Picture 1 (cartoon, one colour):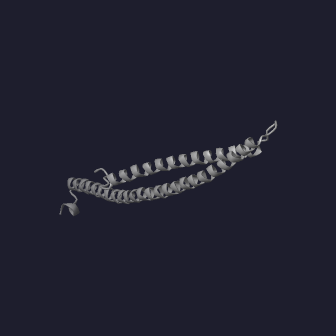
Picture 2 (cartoon, helix red, strand yellow):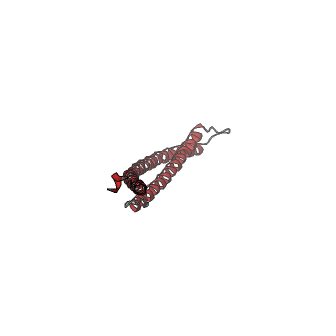
Picture 3 (spheres, rainbow, N blue to C red):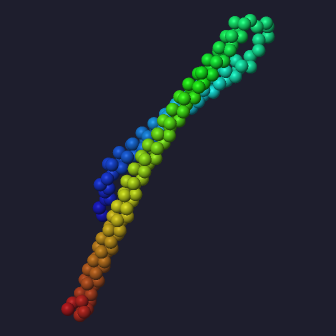
Length: 154
């Protein structure tokens, strides 16, 4: 019996490699997004702590101005970092779309391979059945010839 051969197996492997690359890229994009979100949370926490800070001793005007300046600076940093987080989210969305397309490509080739395999299985089964039928007919003819059956001999 001949072995099944998929002529598009190489392309399927290329698509699988592409899919794994897309999975890795998505993972890296998500990790980067998580890092950016963590940094934004740290900025917001520093700002909130600075806003809540109340000195225990007497405050000078310069210390109050420094604190206010720090709070404003952290607010600007938070705004900038929010934009970075949004960009990171867009990258994640793009990578997810690329991964979906890569999975579709792999699935297309897998379905094609499954159809080819089903066709090959049916043809192989048919060929084997014909071979078994021919063997059975030959055995029956030989047996009938030995017994002198006039229907088969004649």
